[in-house]
Each structure stands twice: as structure tokens, then as C-alpha cells.
Amino acid sequence: MTLGLKDAMAAAATDVACKNPCINSFEIQDGQVGNADIADGAVTDSKITGPISSSKIQKPANVIVVAKSGGDFASIQAAMDSINPTADNPYLIKVMPGTYVENITMKSYVHLQGAGRDVTTIQALSPSSAVITLNDLSLTTMIISDFTIRGGDYGIFNSFSSSLTIRGNTITGNNGYGIYNFYSSPVIIGNTIAENGYGIENTHSSSTIIGNIITRNGIDGISNASALPTIPIIRENTIMGNSRWGVHNGNGSSPTLIHNTITGNGGTNYTDIHVESSSFPNISFNVYDDITGDTGEGQFNVKSDGSLAPAP
Image (cartoon, rainbow, N blue to C red; front, side):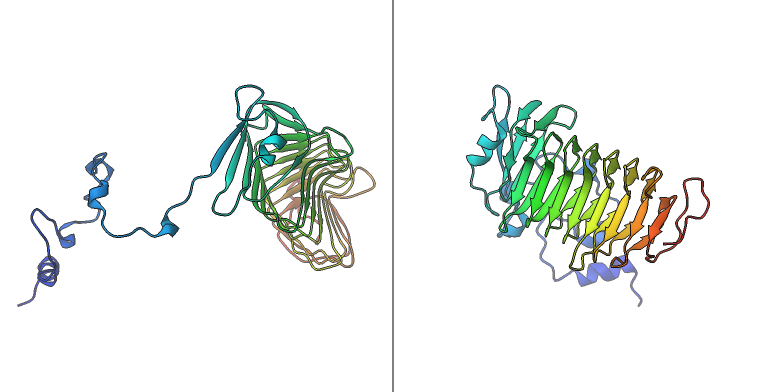
């Protein structure tokens, strides 16, 4: 006798203990149990037996609120100075709306979060200092998000840190650099970096730069330079209207540029992309109008009018 699928599964399940009322797995067809079938509170502590691995439990960050009034602290640096974060004891510093005139030195395992780039500003106390400084070999695992960062020599000075994410900020009006990376490889995503000296400088740094608007900076939009091989990944950015090169590649830097719009940079003396002889970029699937210097490699680039762009 040949058993049908359901009968065969039922036979195979006869040795599986099942106390009434119970339903064996072979009786449940795909799609029969949906969210509506699971009532709130149906799964309780008493129904969970055995240990739960600590890797399945994520410890929530400690939360400190900085506000002009009514918060735990009235200044960001005072909040930072009060904590000793660790990998097992991270902190979230939430900064409420307002302009905070101060210089910040970051610590590891901290998420520094504004209430939104349109409402929370960190203004440098001195135009010759960085607004936010990361300058310690031991620094790791940090996020800076949702601020306007302005008025310093550097917006963010990032030296020797690891595992830094810079997300969703407006970085503007800094005399030297919007973001300066030195021996660091941050993730820079979803920011507007405008009207600084340089937009982003990568020196000995293999940064990942995704989905940013980098515009109207007084020198380069992005500058990659290193005596050591570095491989920044630059993708899905809009890099427009910068006074010198949109993307400058030199001194051993070999970035990947993919799916970017790099147009309207350089005025009459410079170009959208510049490649020096010691740089070996891969440039593909971008929109740019002109490129100068030694060639890299890549394909499928077009001009802003839809015609083929000059080969990299």
C-alpha cells in the first residue's frame, strides 16, 4: 500500500510525544497560522522552557538626555564626561533641539544623536577647532547622527578610530574640512556636506561613502590621498558644484566609484574627476562630464546629457 503524503507524515510522527490538546506539525499547512491567530499574551514566560542564549538578548543602551532645560545635562560634553561606556554597557546621548556652542570629544560605545539636523546644531566654540574630535587609537563603535555640525576648522576630525558611522547630518560652514579621516575607515551615509573647505578628506583611510549630497565646497568634494594603498568605496552620492575637483584621486588611493552623479564641479580650471598617476580607481556606472589626469579603469559612464562620458 502506498501512503499519501499526509498519512506518511502522520506515521512518521507516531513516536513523537504529543499531549492533548496538541497539533502535530504535519497537520499545519503553509499559511494556515497568521498573525491574527496569535493573540497578545499567548506566549508567556511559563510556556518558555530551557535557557535563552545571551547572544539572543541585546542589552539596551543607557540613555542620557541633553537639553537646554529639563534634561540630564545642559551641554553635550558634560554628558560625555559623565559616562564610562563599554561594549557591554553602551550609551545613547540624545540631544534635544537647540544650538549647542561647544567642542565635543567622543568616547567609544556611544551613539550621539540629535533630534534632527534641522533642529539640533553643534556650533564650534572656536573656528580654529574641530566641532567633534575622535583622536585616540582605542576609540571604536560610535555613531554620530541627526545634527547640523558647523563653524569649526573641521566638522568631524576622525583620526585612528574604528567602527564609526556618520549618518544623517548636515556638515557645513567648516573652514578646513567637513569630515577629515586619518587612518580610519568610517561609514558616511545620508549626510549633506556643503560649503566647507574640503567636503571629505580620506588620508590613509578606506572610507565607505554612500548616499550623501556633497556640494558647494570651496576645494574638493572628496579627496583621496595616501602613501599607502587605500580603497575607499564611493557610491550613490551626488557630488556637484564643488570649486575644484568633484573627486580627487591621488597618492596611492584606489577607490571604487559607482552609481554616483558627479557634475558641475571645477569651474573652468578643474574637472569632475581627477586621477593622478599613483591612483588606480575603478569608475563605473556614474554620471560625469569630464575627467582629467591618468586613467583608471571602468565602464558604462555617461554624461549629464546622456551621451558617453570620457573613458576613465
